[in-house]
Amino acid sequence: MKICPLYLNGDWLVSSPFEQVINPATGEAIAQVSTIDRARVAQAIADAHEAFQSWRKLTGKARGMFLRAIADEIENRSTEIARTMTLENGKPLAQSRTEIAFAVDHLHWFAEEARRAYGRIVPQQVDGKRHLIIKSPMGVVGAITPWNFPLVLAVRKAAPALAAGNTIILKPAEQTPLSAIALAECVAAAGLPKGVFQVVLGDAPEIGQEFLQNPLCRKVTFTGSTEVGRILIAGAAQTVKPLSLELGGNAPVLIFDDIDLDRAVEGALAAKTRNTGQSCIAANRVYVQRPIYEDFLEAFTARMKSLKVGDGLEKDVDIGPLIDDAGLTKALAHIEDAVARGARALCGGKRFGDKGFFIEPTVLADVPDDALCTQEETFAPVAAISVFDTEEEAIAKANDTIYGLSAYAFTADLDRAFRLAESLEAGTIGINDGVPSTSICPFGGVKQSGWGRELGSEGMDAFLETKHVSLGLQI
Ligand code: NAP
Image 1 (cartoon, rainbow, N blue to C red):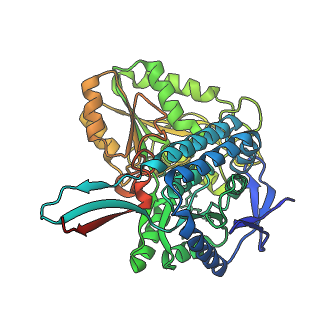
Image 2: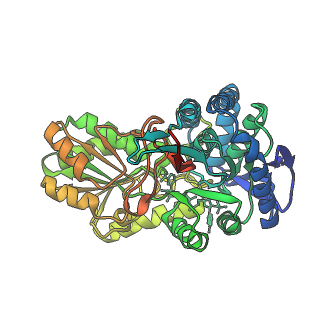
Image 3: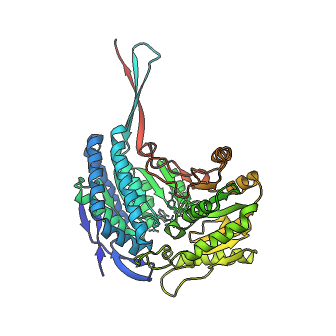
């Protein structure tokens, strides 16, 4: 079986113990990946600190050219990377290609932003002084990413961090390290100086603590569960380490009776089923206004039944496997809980096949507010649907969660659209849009969905210090 090295200070290191990478479509191991201990992570931080001394001095334009070179390498190898991503994550091949295109777009966006780390000059209010506001890179960044978008979420951290002049160490999820290693191969081929970008793997809590406690690591950026986010916040309190946190979600979808039914069905379907429902911005709760409730259930269920489930490498597959047995067990438990509380299962509800971690696309109607699938992320192609009467009720239900990453609404009423945009407590709001993410706009959560924003013109701020320089002048 293939043994994968880690990318450390410009070299490839094979190091045991090895972690197995499992194909979730088959449950079989496809590769073994090297791991390192905490002391070696500390060495990586020291190397990244050394590399920072010269990387920070490059112009933004020069750093941007490196990012473009990485993007070119990813594009050149996109067929092979898409296959790797599908093998380790399970997502349909077409969605792996879309993720790669998105990652390339992020790199191009931040290659441009690298030239725009603008400061400003503040008019003096005392004679003989001038005030400059300048932006400086922070230093070494520790990044921890999840398995659901293994390439794009790594790039979403690396591209702005590097554009801003920092160096970065990436700790990908244990389920999907191969996409991160492919990214490292592209970084190496693009000729970035050694130590500027490294990939580590090993005991996640230990690596997290090293990032938090090592004084040379100046920033930790994390995407993953709110539960681990809380652990990082507690650890960061000891060293006052700046954190960016992209955490869990529990996205509501509000469907009003003024919308064209097909448009609502297709929008909700995209928000529900992309990445086999394993997206932080996946529609988790669907609320439909009473006059169109039964029609929506019928049309939506028909579409869910039409989706092709299978190995993501097969042609025309819409729904791949869930990431692992724990993900499958959780989704089945959510279905069982909802039905026990009175929900109607309109389709699906069971494991699909007898190998890998597949589940049937499932529609649950009349799901009560206290069901697990309403309270927590189900992270599966399981649609939990219920009815509402008034706009006020819909907004109250939508906001009745500790999370606030994304929310969706489908309505033809412009006044209502603005009321919803202003009332829904979420960092990203898709109105008549089931796929709202883009490189050019900020992304992040409110409430317990996180701290800070990635992407957009805000994206580099997370990796820059703002300094005030006061000049005393004899003029
Ligand atoms: P997770 O369990 O929090 O894991 C995410 C990463 O954290 C992995 O690399 C994991 O390493 C690492 N980790 C685990 N325990 C840690 C610790 N004590 N200290 C430091 N790092 C630790 O999340 P997941 O289940 O992989 O991902 C799904 C979650 O991510 C969902 O809640 C989803 O909503 C959220 N998510 C959020 C966004 C966003 O942008 N807001 C995007 C995507 C996903 P190991 O794999 O080695 O354990």
